Image 1: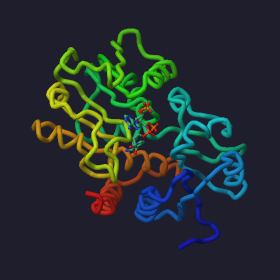
Image 2 (image 1 turned 180 degrees about the horizontal axis):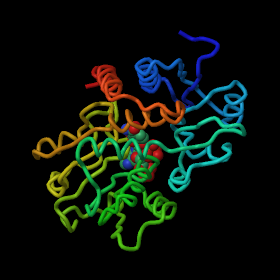
Image 3 (image 1 turned 90 degrees about the vertical axis):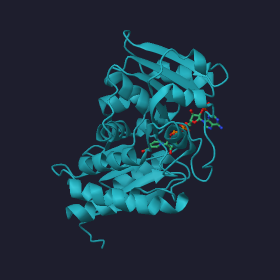
Image 4 (image 1 turned 135 degrees about the vertical axis):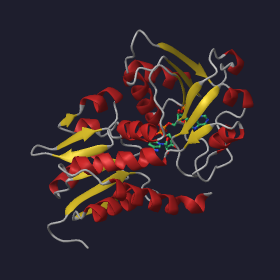
Length: 290
Ligand code: NAP
């Protein structure tokens, strides 16, 4: 129920119809007994005007999704340090002078890994992809002091951009290969943590996978697919066939949302029981894609 005193938040993107965030935030607000409404806002063009309009209309906060996570930055009064380093913002919080930008994707990923008992410290990391989502993985691997990072991507240009945008520690080994250059048997380790952060294999293209060579999966210990739709991607199936652990991007989605919600509703910490309910409802909403 919408009241005049309700906190109003929303999500800006293009497209936006597929987003699970309105469902997630309605479960969080209801579970926490907070009078907040969350609306999908389809912005076809003129992002600046959309941000100014949202501010004028009194929106307390917003999520920003594809394709605006970088483009939104010039329209903010401040950007939190790690969001600035990643160069992407997915959460806006209202202040007296305008919106501050945060990136909760990286913290959502961190929480999701913790929940599955996966630590990146001193580990060898493979990142498939070099787009926006890969940036969060790359930054987290640096912050968590991984031993090495190997980026594998279709285009060299985006590997270079990723490395240039986010400085890495000199103690860390860093390699980048295009898919064409990749020599799987030449990869030096056999216990990689592999992140799938391309859009390959996303619903409805469930049968697709960025790497189909079995040797790749033999070189890895665990796989994390940032895709959550379908719940089990082809990438994850390869891990399963090797008898290895893999997780999808649902918990990352869930926790980035929880953290955004907590930024907008300062002083509240979302209860575990509410997070569980949200996970259950999101899984249910995604079931039809398998
Ligand atoms: P993006 O910035 O557009 O990057 C897409 C990546 O996929 C790039 O590395 C791109 O390679 C690669 N790619 C696209 N089409 C390809 C093809 N046909 N062959 C080979 N590589 C291809 O997208 P993004 O924002 O990083 O999102 C990537 C995925 O992460 C999406 O599936 C998204 O749903 C997921 N994601 C999940 C969460 C979560 O909360 N779980 C959060 C963010 C994103 P090039 O660099 O060569 O173009």
